[in-house]
Amino acid sequence: MTGPAVRPAGPGDADELLRLRVAVLDGSPVTDDWRATFRDDMRERLGADPSLLAFVVPVDADTLAACAIGIVYRGYRGPTHPGGLWGRVHTVVTDPAHRGRGHARATTTALVGALRAAGCSSIELRATEAGAPLYRSLGFGPLPGYMALRPGPAAG
Image 1 (cartoon, rainbow, N blue to C red):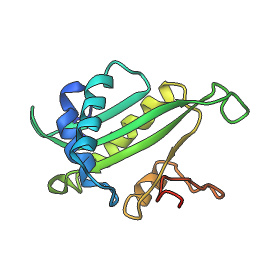
Image 2 (spheres, rainbow, N blue to C red):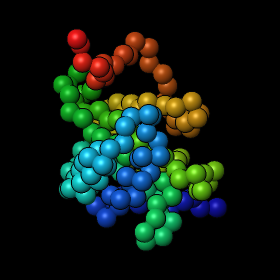
Image 3 (cartoon, helix red, strand yellow):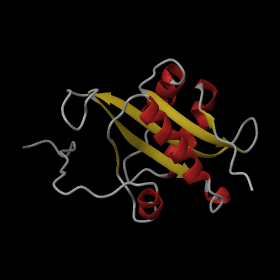
């Protein structure tokens, strides 16, 4: 049995990547400006900027069943990052009509392989409760001590 047909995403996938990305937003406001910025960034960078990687499972020429989007970051070199590069899995989403067919596993596996091939010595992601079993099965594990500073209400 063969898996889903995964391919690298290209600029022509921007509208579908936007549709899928909006489906997994965590309560962030989805404004027209946000949509235009995301779509335009995907169109401009996919295939042209090696730091943006994305893999998709197409349904047909116009529709995507799933995607995994990641970023290559350059930091400083050190014992755990000998090349100074690390990756982040930014978005993994499968359209609800296409779930349960291995699409998330296939796109994530392709993305992780591409991040490693790009020289990333460490790859991180933020897992939802639903996605955590998949990521654990691919070798990801929790790391204690991480915190994040996110934009919030302006200090008064």
